[in-house]
Image (cartoon, rainbow, N blue to C red; front, top):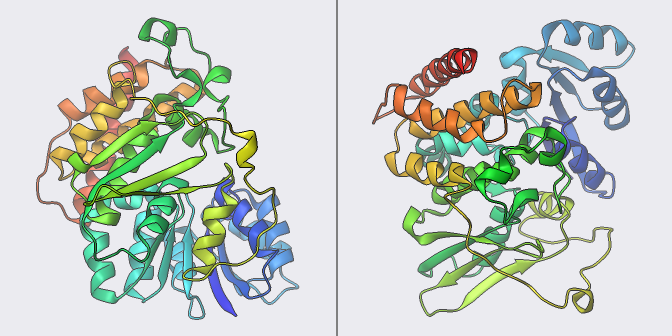
Length: 383
């Protein structure tokens, strides 16, 4: 039996992870956490019966504690509760599926406690990769990526870890607006932006896919996860979302991973690694595909992707500025306060105006996040 903690169990990745676990007889959820959705969370807790349950919102945690008073389940809250959930004694693998920079501290705590990480939280490596990866090596902890693209790269490298990587080919669906020019994007509605052609994801990640900022975050992740320089990471638009990413080795051989657009596959792989197990679902039908297409990304129209490369090359706290500005801008777009095309414009303004720090600590990361959010909210109030 493998014991896992799930951080973010009520989100898109978390709910799919629980559905995967329900098909597995050798995985037990011993700890789980959510933000504030206690209606769904209570159902999950009653079904999986973890020993500890965390609700980040303290008031909602109190409600849940009362609702579960007849069960022998410890209910905790806040960042301390999230860290306690991540570091729970029985836990062997922590799935970090929370959205945002809130995932950084519990991930670091789990690594320090010797827990392997199934990583589905982009911000952890985008903002703190320079801290996380050396710490994981020091503690002998495995970081297994859950993003479909990074899982594909991870699987493509298996058995060739000692071989020189010439290029990482990071595939992108292109989102719902592939092929449109900037003028066309100015009239985009929220409904348009949430209509992803291939994947079912949460609202924030879906908007990030539409702006291609999501792919920029994944470039930064790939840089830290696989130790490959940024100039050897190539983004390729692959509309069919069949090839989930690939690796080119120094002899010119390209190895990639193909499969349906189903996030349960990389989640399942993270749980079973280094083995594989049976999972329900429709297999990939090669005869129905007919063709696979590959295009260059339009980094002028979707200049959020170009800004991501700039932020990654600058290093220091610039990726944090990029990420925090994007989070605030996307939240504003979801509220209807700004237009779609203003999202990368706001990111660019933040990258120019928020103070740059070259050598960063964890405190620098969170101070930068705070300052960036304050700048973006002020900026939005006057545009």
